[in-house]
Amino acid sequence: MPGIVVVGAQWGDEGKGKVTDLLAERADAVVRFQGGNNAGHTIVRGGETWKLHLIPSGILHPGKLCVIGNGVVIDPKVLTDELDGLRERGVDIDALRISANAHLIMPYHLMLDHAGEARLGKLQIGTTRRGIGPCYADKAARLGIRMQDLLDEKILKQKIVAALEPKRLSLRPYAKDPALDLQAMTEEYLVYGHRLQRLITDTTRLVHERLDAGQKVLFEGAQGTLLDIDHGTYPFVTSSNPVAASACIGAGVGPKDIDEIWGVAKAYVTRVGAGPFPTEIDGPLSDELRERGGEYGTTTGRSRRVGWLDLVALRYAARLNTLTALAVTKLDVLSSFDRLKVCTSYRGAEEVEFEHFPYHQTMLHHAVGQYEELPGWREDLSECRTESDLPSAAREYLQFMSQFVGVPVALVGVGPGRDAVIWTEAGGGDQAGTEVGTERGTGTECGTPRAAASKAAASKAAASKAAASKAAASQSATPAAAG
Ligand code: IMP
Image 1 (cartoon, rainbow, N blue to C red):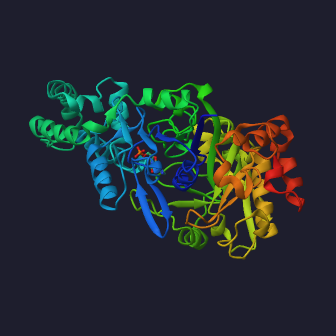
Image 2 (image 1 turned 180 degrees about the vertical axis):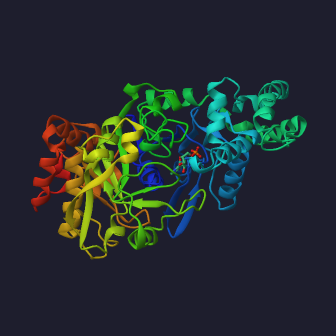
Image 3 (image 1 turned 30 degrees about the vertical axis):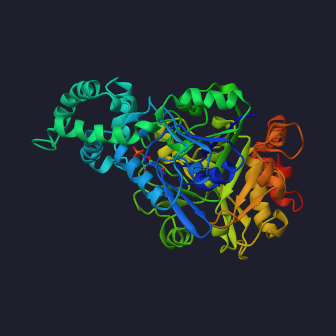
């Protein structure tokens, strides 16, 4: 049972770092497959906080193969700084490998990202300004420079020359003489090449070897499904594909190598940057939720927009990714409301109501969440470790979510620490720390994510609004039973 993918099921920042860290414990290798240092994964372990941007969370598990795949775009300055930071804190980085085919973020990509946003003015996307979009654009235009090019001075120089002239022209309206010195840039990047040389390799083959030997490989996504360049809220998206299918392309494996797909979703929703957000909350309530959840970007420090749980969008994400399990994070943050709203449909222009995530940008921009209200709870959840420790209203909330989306909840986050989680029955119960990602997780037994997910698929009614309402009324079933 080799491949498990972890993806964000909302607009990013769902808490993938923590979930990956937990699943990595039982994996033999962890592979990052898309995005770049626009991502920021925060992991809290043993009272220490780790913020990773490029290096897979698996690095905190000594001896596990950790791969930055070909689908990732790499700013070598950020990568070398991150490596230095980890080394200083005593983390062994010997098991890290970087795909020779991964593309490099160059200084002009950063400049173009800034200039592009400046040009858009009020229409700007709100990118992280890390050069991600321009780097992927060069990759598609076949002007990209890859990790392997760092190891050959002549080729590196040739490629920089080819890429530089069009960039000078594009940047001219913003800077008379953009600081793009061929020699200085080549030298700087050669130094990175020397430093990273030992880590650059054919990672696709390494991953194949692990999979073929029956080892467990965890594929770690960045950003979230709704930021996907094809399926997200275009043009307010990132420039890669954060959906599960992208693990195949960004690591070099086939769909049959993937066995489980975990979607990480917050118990509410956040978004950074511009773009439609049908369940956005304004005013003091949004400030309260933002403060309670510490909703400030790991990468840019920007305050995140916050909203009620959007089940229309989550169901769309579940289908796009064919999720087999949901990891619901930050349930504890909701512990201060008498009633909780969950969005089960949208209302568009001319009062039209619809239940599917709209493909059309104009419809999406006009979409306003329509809600059902569920009972809230005020108890502190941070010490809950089993489903039965949760107040019944919190269990109902999870059950409603799971039934509406048609995917079992396997894991629930109730605090920042890695131990502040509940493994539900669907996630293997309290044995999960040792069982998830083993044969048990793939089998036909009831209660495994896969078994529960196929049950969910067999019963499409479970995903309907009517079933969800019914489920909300029922007190007894656990989220695990929901599928
Ligand atoms: P870019 O990826 O920097 O080009 O930014 C494009 C959009 O994706 C912007 O709205 C960003 O705020 C958003 N974005 C990129 N990376 C992340 C992330 O890791 N979490 C949340 N939003 C992100």
